[in-house]
Structure formats: structure tokens, C-alpha cells
Image: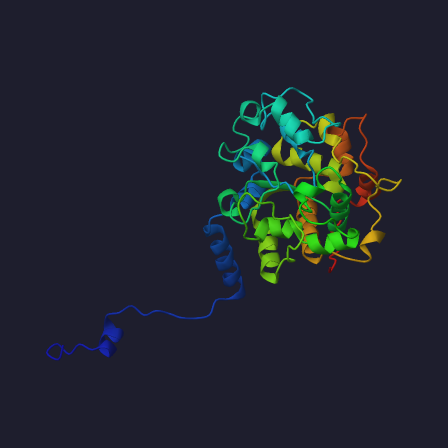
Length: 347
């Protein structure tokens, strides 16, 4: 080095190219950030929303995985069975038996999904297993981007579960325990059902909503559930807006709407005379905070998709809703503002 008079300083003068370091302009920063976003791989959910063709979106979303929470949208199976791209061999206009205590199970017995819904659902996780109320904490990484679900106002869901004399002892308040003292006791013990379904670590075959003595979701579980809802769902519907949800499903994933799909929400016992829901007075002001936050987020996703795929009550009446089927009372009351952003409610 000494013989040839080489040093870092001299090399920097005549050999090494000069590197100009300067801060980027605002326009350059915007372009750089945009390039970085484009360069990263998109999630399945993002790819679905970015795709312009409905049939292509359907191909990306399949196989579907249905997250079925107790008392939320069992009749979603009617949507699956009436979609030719999901259950191509199912009879036209098929629907669950209404007078059965296990309508989804009876439908699966008559028309086995593995036979009638070719490639619509994973063979390793078939629809009849999805219909059970199973946890997704461990399943989520495997099926991220393929999950579909309906969401329901949390206190209405709790009251529906409380009044369900047939199944409450199996999917809510386990029959080996003394019955709940009242609706308030029931709700306090079983709050956070949807949050637990998405984020609580439990046995893979155990219903995460089963109680009593199930602690409320932690802050970390609530945060994880919110993130998974934002990032991992191919479709989010709202039970209180069933007709719009059906229309949105077909706008997003093609296929014609059928009357059998629009008879969605089965009315439970003790709903009030206007059919707008259960009287919440027995809850004595209780609010399910963690599931409330999830419900607000689900509504945001739902309303964003209405805008993204051009869905409104007026357009659905033109091409989706048969003239003989009218939206529910809840739907009709909000049709004119169907594309408005919901108000954030702290629970």
C-alpha cells in the first residue's frame, strides 16, 4: 500500500465514484413509497379486490372457508348452494328446511357438499365441518384470504343465543352448568364470542364461544381479531342487511341472485312486533365491547365494498332482487343511505 501511495482518501479522490447523498423531494418520496407498495406481494384479499372481473375474483377466493359464529347467518349456506361457481351440481333454488332444528345439517345430508359443491370448499376442511362453531386462531394462517362470514350486532346476537332453547346448551351455555340467572348474566359470561373465534388459542375442535366462565377477550386478542378481519376475509356481510349482502356477494363473485338466498335471516323467538330485533332491556345496559369494535370494522368493510363494486338498493332492485321478494324492515329503513359510512361507536 505504501509503495504505491494508496489510501482511502486518495482512492476516494480518483478511483471510487462519488455518491451523491441528498434528501428526496416530496414528489420523489411519494413515487418511492408508491413503488414500494407495488413491489410487495399483495394478499389474497387485496388481489380479489384489485381484480376487475367477477369470475376471476371468484377463482381467487376459492376454496371458500365459512366462519360460522353461533346465531349469525346459518342461511348463508343457501347462498353457497345457489351459486353455480361454488356448488355447480346443486338443484336450482335449493334452500335449508325451515322447520328443522338443524337446517344446515339436514341440507348437507340431502346434498353432500363434497358431491354437489366441487372445489367450492377445501376437501380437508369441508363445508359441513365449517358449519360447526370452530375456532380460527390456528386455522387463520392456512385459510387467510379465503374466509367469508356474516356479522351481527353483538347484543342482538347474544339475545338470540339466550332465547335459543334448542341449541343454547350446546353452543353457548354448556348444559352441565346451572342455567344463567338472566340475560345480563348470560351476556357478561359469554361476551366477545366473535373476537374469541378469531383470536383465542383453544382446542381446534372446541367452540370458543362456549361458556360459562370464559374470560372476556384481552386487549391483544381484540387487536389480533381486528387485524385478521381487515386482512384475511374474502367477503364480509352484515346480517341486518341481508338482501344487500346477497347482492354484494354476487356483484363480487358473479352468479345470479335466487329468491332462496334472500329469505336469509330466520326470525327467532321473542323478537318484537316490528321485527327489527330483540328488546335489549334485559341486558340492563350491558355492551359487548370487543365484539362491538369488530362489528364496527365489519360494517366499514361492508360499506367500502358496496362502493367498490357499485352496489346500492336501487341497482340491486334492477338485477338481483326478484319482484316477489322484498328486503327486510331493517334493510328498507337504511336503503337510501346504503353507501354512507357507519358511525364509529365506542363500546
